[in-house]
Length: 370
Image (cartoon, rainbow, N blue to C red):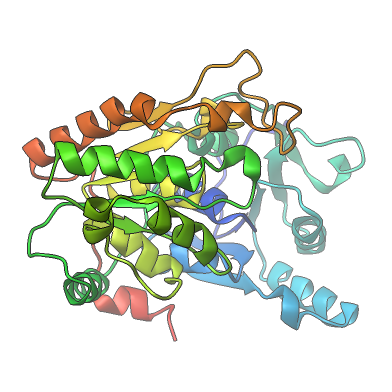
């Protein structure tokens, strides 16, 4: 590896295509890069569906949004990669080594192309590589920057919301029946993988127990495109009291509206999915139910707790299970209740977020939105 500590790049490209949670987890590394090279133009390439979580980020100068549906036929796709790559970057950082990232890295011809230790068939693409490190996922990404003289100290991910976005959500929640100042608990009950989705019926029983312990709270289920059926099962399984305390959005919110909902909440309870990382990024405490996932996704803070059954096979990190997802089926709501209530009550007693993300003026967000 060459000596990169004295590097002074004028243009930097960060490659982080997906998934939504991973893009959020890349924001500490992006911020550290900008602090280290404040005069450099910092570009990020990501998938179009993930880009909104980066809107308004003051550490990013340009976002390249990869729209896979629009990149057909293949020569058009190659032209897009070429256009991104030929921006005269001095430093390219690739967190993922995905095929689309590799096209851009290869086309860039940047003098420094930095990534984690690559398999033999990728190694010629990179000038410098760093061994993988077992750490909190955001810190793991940031560890790639150490050759540049950048140290990570578990900086949290951030989503920068405009005040207008927060006000819009407050207005919408009031229309749904929220009483002014009423504490909200967001519920991230959905996940595409069975190995990471706690049963909706368990969430319903947890909500029943929480409303008995804290009668003044309200619940706000979160869901994305194609996930409404899971929320419907949740509502159907709730007691009348919990159902009456639930604010039900009738449409799948955008990523930024979802983040604004979580920012308005006192607590997020959910599966190991993007909303848990949004909670950290907007300063909302979280209680996460774990099945197949390991603890590298958990931000190291007493405000962010996880609960798992503790079977010998956990964490398997797989999507299939010979035990029919016993780790989730047999994890009873009562085992989650104490952690959830403790976080909620501490948050209510503190009267503020645990690590609030900064707000930007509307103009900072409008620069990226249409």
